[in-house]
Image (tube, rainbow, N blue to C red; front, side, top):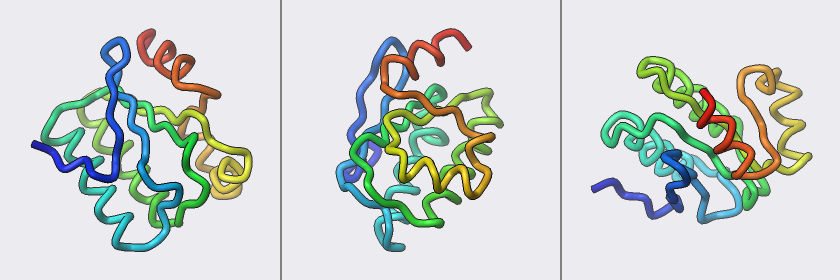
Length: 120
């Protein structure tokens, strides 16, 4: 069974919605733990449609951006999809500054994100 102690997983219409327990993903220890859990969702448990619910996230590190990019690569290999929902404007600016807003799709809420993925 996957260790999801840093994640809150729910299913919505066949899509896995991933919430985060902590409001920041900053230090290397937490980033590594979360990364391991996220990668296992894809590689070991075969989740292919993911919504990352960032509504509770206030801060993240550049290492977290690397985790998201690797998740995207893992999902591309299995024809999976990942989108981000509920991101606050301050965090969205980080994606825009790093030009990652063109790589990820963003949605205001989980329902919109799930509806998008169901149409893919």
